[in-house]
Length: 89
View (cartoon, helix red, strand yellow):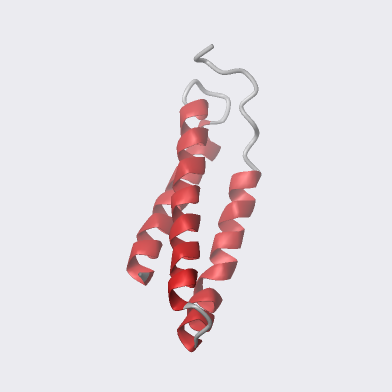
């Protein structure tokens, strides 16, 4: 589970970096959308793992390992400017 989450986390981090770098370009809208999707996949895997572990020592270890990283990732995602004018309209 941890390796799957690690992969999803790293992917979301990369996609957020792409969106940050592409702000102001024609690629931003797609990168913004992909960053959000990637983060949601990561968050979903984390939440699923927490449910699987239940209220156990493994749950505490897993949460301790991932909670701050996922929170920091969410902050970076939330800092991305909203797409105000779609290039697809």
